Image (cartoon, rainbow, N blue to C red; front, side, top):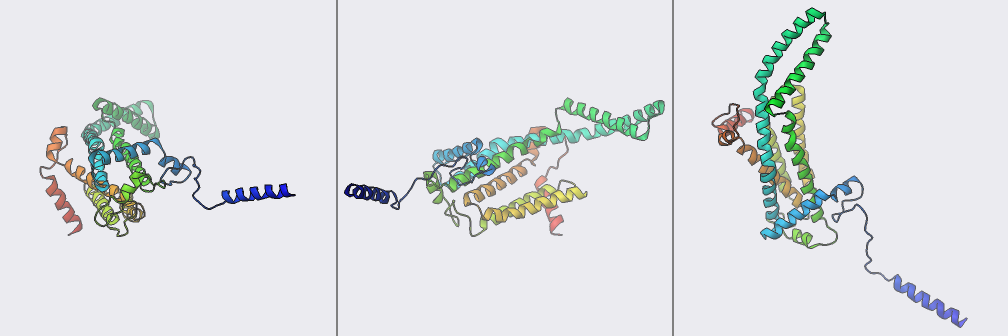
Length: 313
């Protein structure tokens, strides 16, 4: 009995030691990043290789420049959009200009094709449905040949979107991971003290809503300026324009619920993108790109006049 009692006493003492309160290591969860992205597809996206490369890029910019984090985010955004998206935007303008220049030739060829199809229809007794089929099929073939001849397939004009959107998502998730790192890394602590003015903590949302509201106004300005040079007569075009307007407004509460680092990046990206759009309107840029379409010699004055006429009169 004495031996049993002593054994039970030792077991109880060890159990008490094991059950003492204190910090316990948390098990690692697969597919969950340091930012607490959660499991599932979103967690996998936040823990993907492009996002980690974006994290390394942002941290590298901050370490090399020695700037505070808010300035490093602005510098990194400016460098990426200038070195990557600006050349693609210029290339998109060249492709669009070539496609527009082909419209006159396509119209003339379509009239000639219509005549040839009508002649062939009389010879072979085609119905109206067969005539339309032959006309559309041959017109598509002719247009494709023209695109190949001038190296201006319209799909090439969409390269900007296919590059800019993944880049925007990667940098946004990278900043979220750095801001919400639960392991207390050095970058997270520096982000917490790397803000300025009314947003000193970049890991917390901007409770003043200044950054989100500025983001919404900037995006709305970009949408309205873009709509001045695009036709909005059809129902589909008005639906697309109103959808972009609604998205600009929706981004305000979204930006108010994320870390200030993300809202700052979104605002900086929109401002840089808007400045690039203005730069690409310059006649000097058009001459450098050898654009064939006719442009105004005073694009900025015309843009301001168009805005005033549309919204202030």
